[in-house]
Image (cartoon, rainbow, N blue to C red; front, side, top):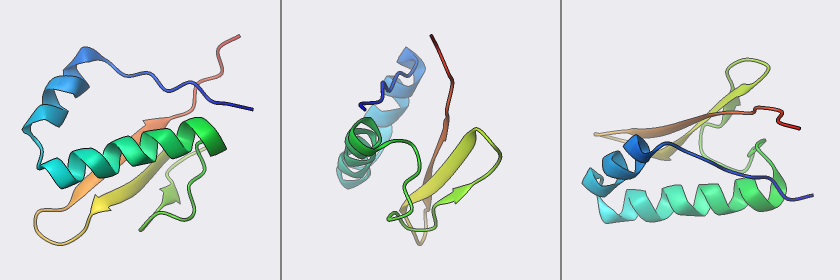
Length: 75
């Protein structure tokens, strides 16, 4: 099963301001979510925040970059 990942235009503008390596890491995360689903236990500091919310670290240290996403069931 493949997953559909969508985001708002605002995120695109925010991504453009991030360091290139963080952008690449984010796109890798999106690719993995599309292929394998939203539960990404192989990512640094991944955790489920609630039943539908997830997060993981894209880059640790200072500054730290974190990605958060929500699973929405759309039929």
